[in-house]
Length: 268
Image (cartoon, rainbow, N blue to C red; front, side):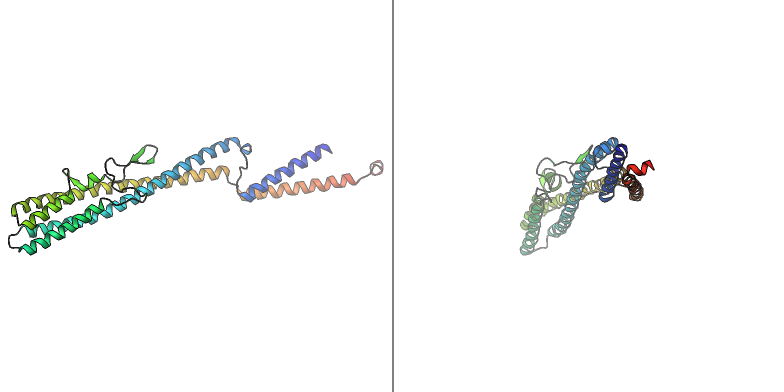
């Protein structure tokens, strides 16, 4: 009787554990259920947490490159317009009023470019870092600045692009054809510089897209492995649970019948 009670107690405990696995959907309720699997799940959990942080960094980098690309496209348009106005200002047939109008438009565009250089990133910091670029870690061995520095973008030959534009405006307003010609050369160089800078940002954007794809594939792989280790196979677990329940009920019924028998039943 003692052995039977102990056996039924263990069976009831197994049924309770199996019910917990079915209700929670997790095969591993505690580390002792499967020490090796539990250890591996802990390792996978840490890897997933690290990947989650890296994924946020990648998303931030993609947002930053998209914002920087938008700013540089606008700057390219402004420089193209400045180039057109400078070519017009280089002709000698303009009146002082016409030259002043051209110069005012160029100065206004130079002010716009100065504001672009101060645009904030989604983190609230400067999108174009003033000085050293802020590198971001995207993987264990991958860290780089998604956006070049302010100097790399808004300066060429050590001179700010906004100043080049204002120098062009000054030359046009003064009617100095020679200086306007020099300014046109400088503006053309600024146009080329901006195109090159935008290409660098595009390269970083493509690199971040590849990292995001790799991170997504790794996340799927880790999730599948973890699920295989700790998640409950419901069809199998329910079948086991039904079998153990039927066994326990039969054992309890038999035990109850035996206990109802008296000494006279055994003697007869």
